[in-house]
Length: 171
Image (cartoon, rainbow, N blue to C red; front, side):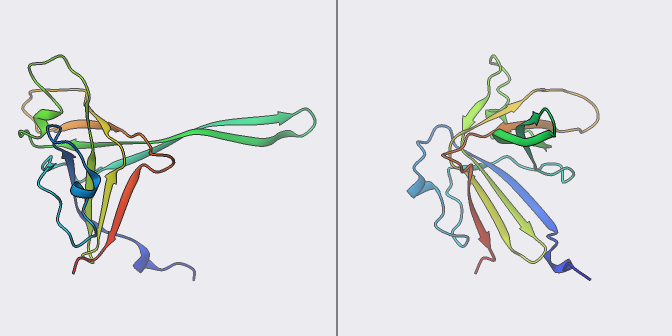
């Protein structure tokens, strides 16, 4: 039988960080060299989020079929690929309030974003945006039930790359 069940990752935890918008970002200073190095203090944790759905990395692309008269579709063109994320934050804390500024006209927060995921084997996957992303919370509800706050993130590539990715088991 084909396949290997040990290749199925089971993610135990995930955290989202934003880079402090009051600090000038310098990659050589603020990005860890490897998986063993801790995040710089300028990375601010957004707190607890819903585990289901977790962080969704939605992928989109424009697709155009090119038909010929006799044969139908003979070519498909793809362009403008992009990735956006969304997740649901449960906490209201000073870092989340950087995204939802309650006493100002709403606007997206523009800053770098980092994700840290840990699987059941203790391996980490860290993703750091290569360029500042836009974070947006469309609602700021007050209600009896705890539903959290949906946050959407728009990424901008640096060339063809969106993230710097570090993976491995810390020493």
